[in-house]
Image (tube, rainbow, N blue to C red; front, side, top):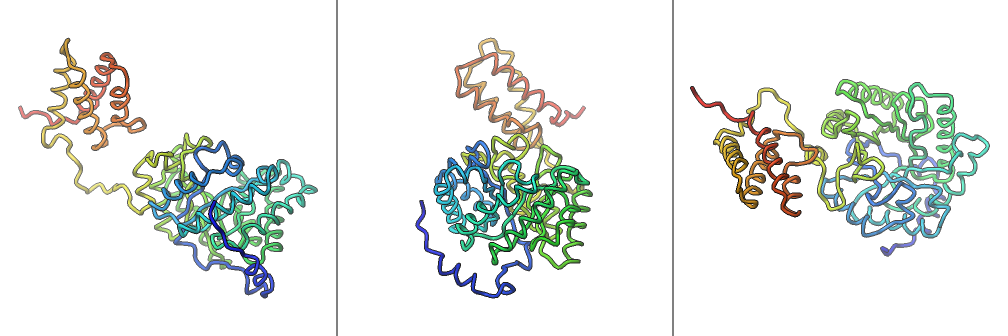
Length: 400
């Protein structure tokens, strides 16, 4: 665990200051480049801190630093806290220190006990958890904003009757945080911009989520949120964007928010067991699922300009040659295994680097699987035939 300095004196000074002078509400959050975080090894958000590993935190935050990300949204689970409060506090402080070491701010997202948010009589049961979290990290330099309730109205618009109760609870929790922590700004992570507006009076920072399926829908939601933020004079942030499995590509959504001058947090940094089928950037080994998504976080986007010079993958005859070599090898009853792997790899390089085929399973991965296994000539022939069929349409036709 990291060595920490005491913050008691700083807390006393903050509590003694006039309330109007204390709240650290940022004027502008447009430079926020954030990510939602849970370790890929964790089963869920509660498990993340129950089985916390400082080495995994260092590994993952270093991945984020490679992409210039500067804010983290991490979930604090009341059940995990209650199971072992001392260990939870120690783990959370280590996480905060790791973020501070990399110049990253942290937005803790509060998760309460089962049934609390929809039972008005149970709402005060959250107070000991809130008080302990404020006492633990309330003066930590990495603490940026409290998200007191994540998507209380999830996932219907307009909200259902049950969700209206949860929205009331979110407002109640915002008031509780304002009372207990006079310094740190508060937000509510609304699922939709209209509901953010409904709860807007209760927060210092406006935040909403957006997994819209078209650019027009993304822009309309941004404009709705920006208009309200300008009207009430509060900073605005989006705390969840990006879901290829929901028609919300990272490179499209991030580009739109950058153009609009609105800060963002992607969901999510790691490919996790919870959401990895539709979201996530990094695998635990530091490789990425989609380089275009990683590039977008650096502000580098795929060109969609119809006037651009397109690649001609057979301009130097490499595809024609690969197709001929592949067919010759496949037709040879005594074909050599190693030669077949070389041809498969050359074809895979052409397909992958020129983006001539789907990359859900990269062609080079298919070759590596065969190379690392027991020689299987039938499987190799089948793969080379597959690659040949994918390459064939990209041959430059011979002149008559």
